[in-house]
Length: 130
Ligand SMILES: O=C(CO)COP(=O)(O)O
Image 1 (spheres, rainbow, N blue to C red):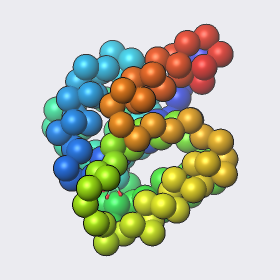
Image 2 (cartoon, rainbow, N blue to C red):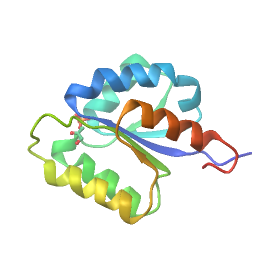
Image 3 (cartoon, helix red, strand yellow):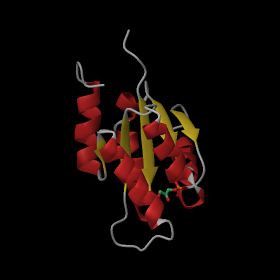
Image 4 (cartoon, protein in one colour):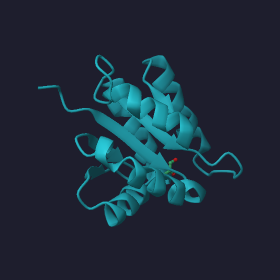
């Protein structure tokens, strides 16, 4: 039996509908994973897909990005899928940058948009991918 993967799923407000649509399309591949989401994103995912194993941390602007960053630093995350809004200023921009930075430091597989997320998810599911 393969180990359960832990995948971070996060979206900025303008990209939440996109993430929910993407998650619905890929629900079968996400179903076996443990999903960690920031507060509002996780709520949206659970509303649309109540059977997913979603653990919610705080909302991004209230520390959720940093909580996920800490999980990366502690080697408790296998991948991060983060639907980023590239067109809006964010009050917690430094947290977003810090999260991405830690992902790079720890060479975590990350995707920031839908098509990249699909490739990443399929890669994780492939033999030896996780
Ligand atoms: O702001 C976020 C990521 O930077 C996401 O937080 P929410 O899912 O709580 O909206």
